[in-house]
Length: 465
Image (cartoon, rainbow, N blue to C red; front, side, top):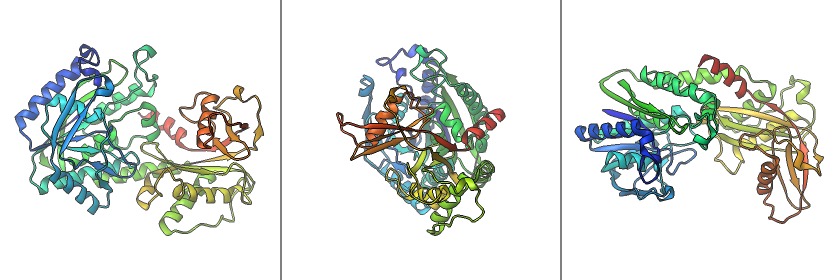
């Protein structure tokens, strides 16, 4: 059994970019193409992070054909290959029997994560998989185990392609890339190559989620599924090539196995649990109250009472926002808040808003029990609102904004990633409040006292890396 992790740079095609700049990757693709041809598999499993991706479930294409193109990149490249629908449907069935959500959603056009390896490798029959952006790497590993079980049940000879690029923040010269340089990007590149070459699966899949968000990679979830497919097998891995000509890491690696070994799943799960438990030792009383509220509500459908022995700071009055994030990918999972206090104290505001963030944020499904081990929490306590006529001078890192008129309102917290100007902040708040383009509004400013642990843990773990 063989598997590969391969990048998907559209610039590898001559009608898009200068392929001479990524010759190592192109040469590796040619080598892999020949190896797959020599192996003569029944099917190639292609895992792409850029197809139809669901929050809490895996997308398994059950159509008769995978038909797609790169027209959005200005290219004439197109593919039309068969899909092993029998295997695809069995993967869904086995995943569901193992309490994983899997199904078939409408295909996204121009899925370059699938098109590029299909085209360059000359594939003819595939299974097309998309990861779930809201599920943990442990769950992706477990889904890989379901894929392997389906292949074994149908006695399929298969090859696995995990399509993904490494860090997108490697270019120190801003003219070389549309992504800004991040000092942690090169750290990740060295780290992931070391973990792969040494077959250290557990450490590769338990990196800090804030760290992963900082470096910007789309490869870890496809890699987790690949590793899950190899569960119970002794893996031999080799790095085939690496280059980063445009500030994006293009890593090619091969995984093979001919021997059985013990499963790594329980070790991986235990390592993830140990990591999150260590993180929770840094929770303050605000975060701990939010987490306890959500865990009791999700597990037992009960609303906790505010403990008698909470500190005085939780008995003051104030508006509160509670936000939920996944630990291993730092994805937002829910956020609900009150801009002015509606209960007798901050502690009660946290309890009410934590439950709402877990169950009433209409952008997400309600949090379920299986997710709790992979969630971390932030609590923002808001200052009083102040009308600000000169809002154009505000710093969005320091001030949040409330946009209001007699009929509508929209709010945005301060210091949010990706919001670099006050104009951006106001625009987002206007959209959240569903304001019309020419509608009049007033801007109120506020600050927040943020309770979070992710930055502290990130810095601590980076010293280890």
